[in-house]
Every structure is written in structure tokens, then in C-alpha cells.
Amino acid sequence: MKETSVLCLLFLISLLSCTTNQARLTVSPCSSQFFEGDFVSLSCEEDDSSAGWTLRRNTSKRQRTQCGDGWGRWSGSSCNITVFLLDSGVYWCESREGPISNMVNLTVTGGSVILQSPVLPVMEGDDVTLLCKTKTTPSNLPAAFYKDGSLIRKQPTGHMTIQHVSRSDEGLYKCDISGHGESPSSWITVTGKPTTTSPSTPTPVSTSNSIPTSASPPHLVLSVLISVGSVCVVVLLVLLALLVRRDVDRKPEEIYTAVVYSAVRAEDVSIGDKTIRKRSPRL
View 1 (cartoon, one colour):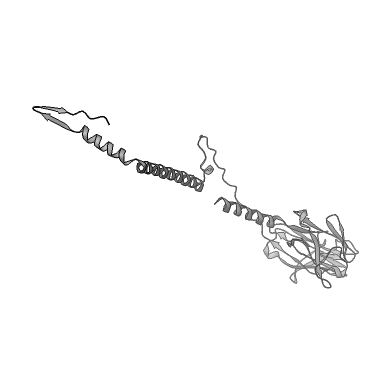
View 2: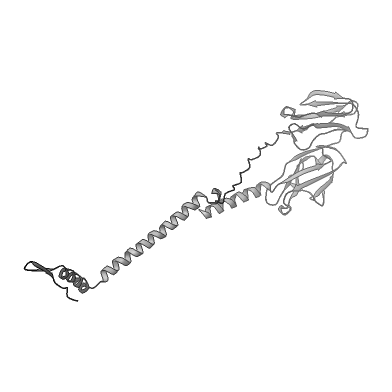
């Protein structure tokens, strides 16, 4: 039973290790759209540096190439890249042990307008700001914002804030600046808030001198009782065997003498009106 408990504990520890041994891909500047020639830094924020995380990507030309293999340059824990049209694609972190991080889709445009939107999923209830930005002119020009092809609103300063986002705000967004053009479309993902557990009730402190019940698990008590019982049974069997052996080893003459001695002591002789008890002979 003890060995089984140890194996279960090791299994749970291995599961926890697999769960926590993750990396998170971050992008700076935090956007999913870039102009040609922009400088972008991608980092694998890792929980375990020994896992050997590296950055990989899929583009229209090549699949599963890593940073430094014809694109990008490692600097510390980040991969730095000056992006061009062919750098559009899906990026992720991958360890030599197999697990991968979240994936991000980066779009590089040769146009004059981009939509700066969160590259990572946003949490339900948070506020999200979208910025419609031009390459050569100030980014505070009036802009129109669209979701799934439908106009949401027009903003005079080129940015729009969605307050307290919900799952219904998830979708494909783009923007348009009159006289400059339209941005590519980017998907915004909304995730639910993590569930919170209520604080556990504190265990009352025992003031007695007795040992807490938790210190003596039922299976441990049962094991002790079984062990003690087994020892008692063995001791009784040994004593019984010794008694039987002693009786068997007694000589027949000793047994006969004991019987005759008992019979002689029990004889009484009557003479007249007196009863005389014979003395028992010494044997």
C-alpha cells in the first residue's frame, strides 16, 4: 500500500511538471500588424530555462524554420527581426522536449495603414483599445472601425476603446482612414476569466493532548492491528507446541508411578469400629 501511494505521488508530480513547464510568446511592439521595415522583438518567456525553448514560424515560403535560420537574430532571450512581406506568418515557441507555446499570427503590409490590436487573447471584462495608424502621417487622424465587415463607429482621433469586452466582441477587425487606405484584418480573441475558488475554512486547532485523527490514518491503524494479532497467534501456537511436546516426552514409568501413588493414598482399612488409613508408601 505504501509503495502504491509513492507511485501515485510521483505520477502527480510528473503531471504537474508537464503542466507548468510552458513558455509564453510575447511580441514587442504589442501588435499583430506591422509596416515593412518595422523592428519587431519576439520573446519566449519560459518557466524552465533548461527546456531549451526556441522560436519557430510558418510562412508562405518555408515551414517550421527557427530564428537564426535565414531570418531573425537572437539577442539574449529574444529574437529580433526587421520584418518584410515574406515575414507574415504564424510564430510560436517550441522546446526540444516537444511542448509548444501559444501561437501568434503576424501580418506585414506594404500599405500605408495598419490596425494595432492585441496580438494575444484578451480577457473577458477588460478594456481593449484599437489604434488605426498610418505610416507617414500622425496617427490621430479620423478613422472608421469595422467588425466582421460591418461598421462599428467612426472615431475623430483614430483610436477606439471597447470597454468590458465579452465573447460577443470576438471577431475580425479592420480600420479605414479616408484618403490613406484600409488596414488588413486581424482576429481578436476573447477568453473567459479564470474561475476563483472560495477561501478554504481554517482547520480548528485542538487544545487537547490527544493525537489528531489525521495523524493515524485508518489504513495505518488497521495494519498495526493486523501485525499485532499475527504476532499473538504465532506466540500462542509456539506455546501450544511446547506443551504438547513436553507431554509426549514424559516417560511411561513416571506416568505409571503417579497413577499407583494416587491409588495407594486413597485406600482406607477398617478394623472393628475404627477406620485406619494406611500410610502411603514412599516411592
